[in-house]
Image 1: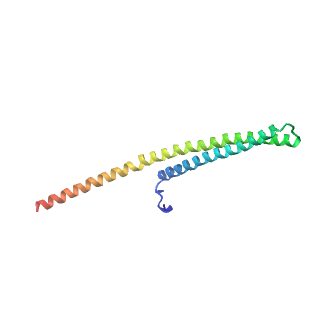
Image 2: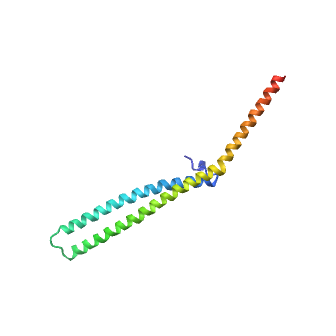
Length: 137
């Protein structure tokens, strides 16, 4: 699709198209955040379990264990906040796309439909008038 042919002739279409693009990007971000969270959570959990399985922990192992436990807490908090941001963006963009479409329909399309209806009626009238002129002669 050519970028110059995008329907940005009025603000309502632009808002709707922008929000639809935002829907896709926020949905992708939501999935990406969840996959990254799952991977990081599993890696940290495995490291914690390996260190806890050791019978005698030296100071270095205790520090590693503490580090992985803190990292696990951070991963969980990051997941919650990032997924909430993605979900909020998704909901706002759905709402924006819906409102943009409604505004376009109400403020523009109704008038264009009426214009087409009147032009069609005018053409029918002109054809009928022309046919009467032809039949008269």
